Amino acid sequence: MSDFLKKLFSDPAEGSVPMNQVPKEPFSDQLDDNIRQLEELFLVPKNDALKSRAMKIPSVNRRATVLFVAGAADTDMINDHVIRPLLASRLDGEGQLVGEIKDNILTVSGSEVIADFREAVRRLINGSAIILIDGEKSAIAADTAGFEKRSVGEPTREIVVKGPNHAFVEAVDVNKSLIRRQLKDHRLVSETVTVGNESPQDVSVLYLDNIADKELVRNVKDRLAKVDKDAILTLAALEELIEERPYSLFPSTVTTERPDRASSFLLEGHVVLLMDNSPDALIAPITFWSLFHTAEDHFLRWAYGNFARIMRLIALFIALLVPALYLAVITFHPEMIPTDLLLAIAGTRERVPFPSFLELLLLEITFEILREAGLRVPTPLGTTMGIVGALILGQAAVQANLVSPLLVVVIAITGLSSFALPDLGLSVMVRILRFGFLFAAHLLGFVGIALCFAVLLAYAVSIKSFGVPFFSPLTPHMPSSRDLFLRPILKKQWQRPESLSPQEDKRAEPGGGNGS
Image (cartoon, rainbow, N blue to C red; front, top):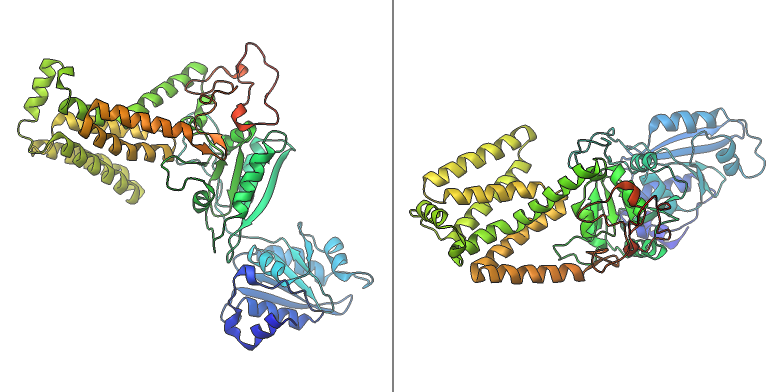
């Protein structure tokens, strides 16, 4: 027995060790010693999660024990595919007993022979059953994972009128199945990288081996390997740890709950990350177009999809700039407003005690509070409270002469436009930047807005996501199918964007015209 384990048995308090400090101590040929060591590592009897089932294999007259963690393993699968086959087995006892049981007795798929305690602990907390046999220095890990999971449902955030209506769930195996159902390609690779020191979690890295850039895949896996945290519970936490600009408003990755959208990214050469406990897929790298486009764009006819994109683009500029433009015109450039409208605005603001800037801040902050309240209140009340609250507060504020009626209209249009933005990260970014444009308009009017927009655009075109420029393939200009603000018809989308450095830059031979 190693010094570490001797210390462990002499002082049970020392049994509380992180996963990365569990020794790679080989199994003993004494069954009782192996069981005792695993019980110490799982803090038995204080911890009642580790369950065991002792038995004797009749054909070879050997004692055996099956261990598993309650709540992680499927007990019915253990009974039907592990314990019953062992009790009914007819073994001759010749050769390696562990290998014979794994190959010829167990009826569960995914069984492997393991030889040390660290691997045994890792398999147990991931739902496997460990079979220990007296006289054997190795054990069998049978894949009997039985974590509870919900059934596949419909998307709640990325809703489409026309297209598939199933969404990811919290089980990574189910999510892989949903992607493979969409993308039936034998070259779809799924690699596993473990993150977290004390509570390890497996992250599945998916990519198409014939399309994705090898350097990009290596970059993603290297960043995952460098994550140094005790526990990573969800993809949302992992997203911040692997991106290069954690303080930036511009995201480096994007999440999606739709398997069809994740499959589309894979076909372009992106890398998809999946993880247990997260009903989303994390996409890397991304560009601005990844945030601007939706899954429905390609399900609709060419004219309908492009019309939706034009409306989305208008909504983007309204949500970002309209309050600042209103403030700049009212404060610095009233000569731009027709005289009749200017007199009407002046009349509505005659009794308002606050300057326009404070009016805008008051209404913007109120609208953001209503939005957050609507999210936190239970679903049946959230929508009603948001609508009723906005109507009542807006009308009351106008009647109390706290704000002008025209400003309420401006804020309402701005808020509705922000809801038209498809990605949550893009929407939040625009909402935050809107306050920056407000301050710029308050200080310098149109000049301030122009300077702020120039700085924003210069920064956006300078940043990269996993080595890919944020506004590529528009700037820097690279060959692509020109699926940017507007999309061409599908038969002209044969060119993959060169910004991703795909191994195969052609989807198929061009069917007519040059789509690059």
